Amino acid sequence: MIIRRDDLKGPEITALLTEHLEDMRATSPPESVHALDLDGLRQPNIRFWTLWHGHNLAGCGALKWLDAEHAEIKSMRTARAYQQQGVASKILQHLINEAKAAGVQRLSLETGSMAFFQPARHLYAKFGFEQCGPFADYQLDPNSVFMTKNL
Image 1 (cartoon, rainbow, N blue to C red):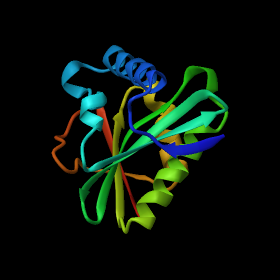
Image 2 (image 1 turned 60 degrees about the vertical axis):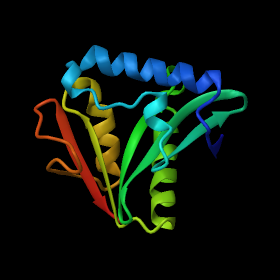
Image 3 (image 1 turned 45 degrees about the vertical axis):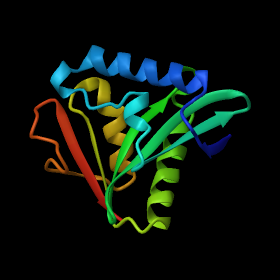
């Protein structure tokens, strides 16, 4: 498996992000869906990576810079065919390494509070993320869990 910086132009990433947005809309009320679409991810303060197994897209993740020392994890997703195979751990470790290399001191994220998101919350906790209050432009929301990690 290899991880590479992605330009968000391939049909594989379009399909994976469409699946991601569909799941977020199916599990969260509209006002609590904070996942970004392709245009939202094509911003100058966002870097995006994909993990490939041969020619198959296995997962993705992004970093959104909030300021010079604080970044947010966005669009973490594992393709259904690759779930429970360590893909999310590989992507998360890559994002942490990239953030550290760029001088980020604090890495934060928002995920859902529902049972659907329990595996994600468990993964983030395993990597040292702890619950915190809302950050950046987020508001307190019973459907959201906010987590952060000092690097």
